[in-house]
Length: 311
Image (cartoon, rainbow, N blue to C red):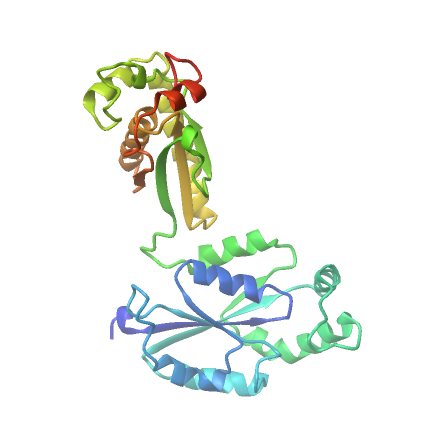
């Protein structure tokens, strides 16, 4: 049986407050199907259920979270149930245990003002000790153990991504949007480049009705003394930042390129940046928000940095 035919299942458990919710959310972000507080005795039935038709992948790996609050929780019975499931060669089942020092868990409960599930009317310290004792056998038996005592939520997300990311999964969608400042900023822009310092083709009667997709406009813009260096620095910055966003697990990165009207300079620069990023190994989408907008002298004159420069 090939690995592609095996159902991968990761069972996630550990001490309350140690980061199970963060781990499950991170796994979901990188392509896993996740379910929290699912009774282990029902796992076999779940594995036989076809995946949602809305998913693009045929059968994604499955991450199941459980803890002391899960219905039917009993450590010894759980281990027996998991061992039985592991006997089925169709499944690859492993367990991740999230541990944390008692003092740090007390601090977290104190900050959030939540009550420990095993100490609703007692100090959190007592619930933590009781739960640690209950989970000791599972901790010893788990395939993966992560101690989150000294990890921030971002640190834990990074560990989960490093250890459980799916191969061939493109987790970051990069979009470059050209637009005109005179028509308002686009929503959800992460990185913004203002190219109104470049020579504006709008004021050339022969180029006014053209766009940044036309070669005469491209030639006009590229003759600006600042053009080549600016484009180089923009590209270098994006080639530096985008891998950082990917590593951080950012699902979408939206890059805005703005000029005055959104039809000339921003369009051309967006196209050139896309070309440079493709050459560097990225696959950005390009959108031209105002490409079809009607040219308006009033808007250009009102917002242009200089009547002969900047769109």
